[in-house]
Image 1 (cartoon, helix red, strand yellow):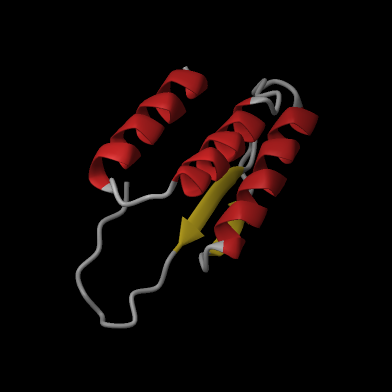
Image 2 (cartoon, one colour; image 1 turned 90 degrees about the vertical axis):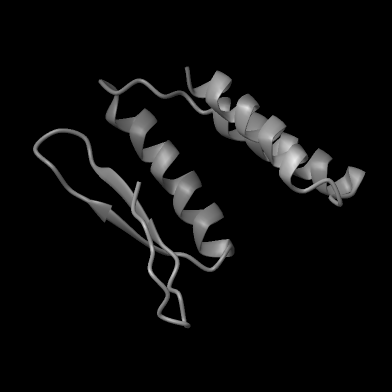
Length: 92
């Protein structure tokens, strides 16, 4: 499921941003391939930790503030990009 979602996301991205260069597209595809290659078994804490570390690095590199929210089960990843113009935002 994760793979299908990200492949659709890449496809939508190329429609929205047609000015992206071939190199940018190659970089984005490689990044998605790297992400979906990380094991993602919700019952394996090591798998979830690897996913969270990858997400923290990528989102931090893009200027997001990140948090790991501990739960009774597996931790949750949260990323926030501040809007310096105080515009209305949406959480999804």
